[in-house]
Length: 310
Image (cartoon, rainbow, N blue to C red; front, side, top):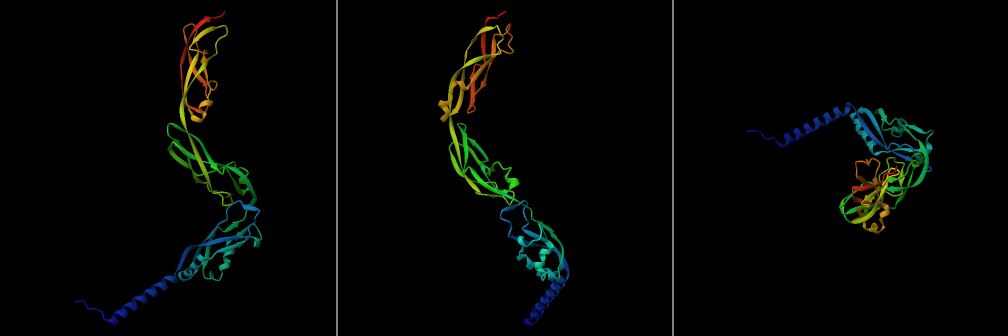
């Protein structure tokens, strides 16, 4: 039968385990290790009339080596911040090894092998401000009986502040994608503007409202004259029909504005053999941009020569 430990034996056993663990911990902490520590960086008194041409690092990555006990103490640095006062700099750059002197008392037994970046450069540009239009990027489809009319932002422009070299080339500011599918009514909403890639660029607004307007289409029919082109000199003929019928879809708001003179149908005699042929192709040479699904007839017209000339 297994012997059950007495209370005194259990105490001795637990004390031995605790002592062994402490000895193991002390041996482990006495050995040397290499690791890395991240230290945040903050900046003060940067010029207000200029902007940074390149972003400044917001942290330093330190590669250090020391005993385990020293590194355990060193990790208390993670709550500290390296502060850089621009007014106290003697040039346009600072060596990051000099910055860690702020923690010299804590680093006396720690070997700093490397700091990234090793140098922080302060490069400024003249600050510029520009009013640019907002460009709504969208992916919108409509019901077959409707067409997309407008996608308008509000406000339609924003102020962009940043380095002059960047602002001078700016022509618009894009939004995130606005997406709708198979719509048959107007919509409105809010969309975020694309975030600047440069931290030194600031927008007067981070989002804009937008309105999506659609319009229902209806069908309209017009009769237009067929114009003869490339007819050789001296030839006169009778062509039938002399008019073409055009059928198309147009937005309801523009129905009454589309007139026959917006279209042009032509009978092109350029390749016609007048000895053997009695038909000429008819094509639609012009049509307004605000119509769709245009159909016309006839595709060919017949002709009869009246006079061939000399």
